[in-house]
Length: 358
Ligand SMILES: *Cc1c(COP(=O)(O)O)cnc(C)c1O
Image (cartoon, rainbow, N blue to C red):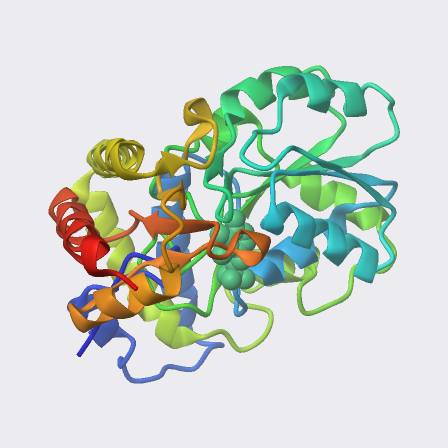
C-alpha cells in the first residue's frame, strides 16, 4: 500500500507528473533540450519572482548548497544557522577549505536582523547564507526582516537555502535582493528527488571569477556557461526525466495560481499548528513557525516510532524529529500536493491512535 507522505521530502507526486518521468529520451545537445530547459527557466522565474538566470543541477539540493558556497566565496563566508541544514552548510564550507564562521541560533529561534547586522558590520565577509525554512526545528526565517539590514551591505552576496519552502511560501527573489536562491525538486515543487535548482544574479556570476578553485561539477559559473553559450543547455548530462516532469509540473503550479498555492499552504499550516497546540506543543517560537511543516514537541512522551507504524497501517507517514530531536519532537509536513483535507485526515488518525499507543 502506498503511504501518503506527510514528511518534508520526498513529498507526494501527482500520478500524471510521475508519468512524465517516463517520457522517451532526447539528446541533451539538441534544440529540443535547449527548448525544454528554456521553458523550465521561464516558468521557474514566475515561481521565484525573478528575472535572474536559473541553473539546474542533477543532484539533490545539497549539491547547489555546496556548489554555491564553494564557487562564490573569495574571502570569507558567514553561515547563519537555525538548525541541522544551516550546520550542514557550514560543514560544506569547512570540507572545501572555505574560510567561514557560523552563528547558530537557539533551537526553535530564528536568525534575527540584529545578529546579521552584527556580523556583516565587521566587514570580514563577502558571502552570507541564510536558511529560509529549517526543516528540523520548523522555524521559518523572515526574509523581509533580514533583507532590510542586508541592504546596508550591498557588496555581500546573499545565498538562501529555500529547499523546503520555495513554491510553498512566497519568496520574491528580486525584491529581496537574494543573489542565489536554492531549492530542490522533492519538497514543495512536488517532483521526485534528483534535481536542484537555483537563481543567480549576474553580479554573483561576475564575482565568482575571483574564486580560484570553484570545483567543476557544481561550479555555478560552469553551469551558467552552457546556458549562455549553448542556448540553455546543461554542462553535463542532465536528468532529462526530471526535466520533462518539471516542465509539466510547473504548468500545474502556475495554473493553480501562485497566490492560491501560498494560501493553501498557509491554511494547512494554521490548521496543523492549532491542532499541535491543542494536543501537544509547538517546538518553534510561534511567530516564526513554518508554513510548510510543523515541528511538534512530544509533550506526551509517546513513542513517535510506534505512532508512525500505526499510521503506516492506515496508509500515512509522518516524520520523527531530526537528529537530536528524534522522539523529542515529530514533524508533520504540509507541502506540495497536500490539501487541508489531507491534514484533517492525518491529525484525526493520530487522535484515534493515541489512546491505545504503546
Ligand atoms: C531537504 C533540505 C535540504 C537538503 O536537500 P537535499 O535535496 O536532500 O539535498 C537542505 N535544506 C533544507 C532546509 C532542507 O529541508
